[in-house]
Length: 264
Image (cartoon, rainbow, N blue to C red; front, side):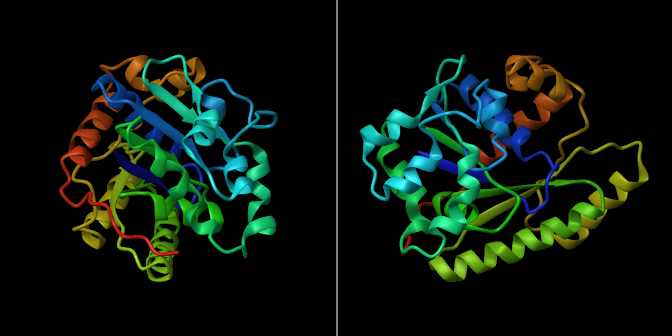
């Protein structure tokens, strides 16, 4: 089982789209796939037709329970309409976790302890992260084998990337772990100077961490979200779907994806 977290400390850069698209393509590859929504906004949960305002149980219960086993974790997971694609949904109540449990010992590994029971049930897990540092972000980073950082190709997004990398270093030091990561340029529009110059800045500044390609602007993403389907199950031949397919191929063969010893 391989786990990817999709995170950036800026909203609107394509985190949920990236998680959904990669998960949909993973299913087409024949993999049993789980999505975990760790964003209090619940965009991923809403994407598949569940209401984060009312859904019970949810990710919130994993944090409240403290200790979990396979049966408990499975009781929270919901099936989507797509075969082999499940979701562990978020409720808006997870927005209160930092205030309630942020200082409680062991909360940084709540998700690690929950998903460790699922290794015989899923091949791939994709975690959609909140855009702010807190107990949810710490859990997502501690749980993943590899971090994917979508970055919109415009200069305001560079600050979000900078903050994300600072957070990554903080979590690595605190948890004594080493997290591999890949920066993925998103919403690229070759017709605009802002996109072209932003992509060049990323190439110049992060040459060893930047994915070699980019995710283009594609209106089919909006259409597929309206239908509640990953783009792979809506229009698999579009340029956006082809780009994410190439990204999935690359992260699947990345030899840096190794399990780490995690310390509380």
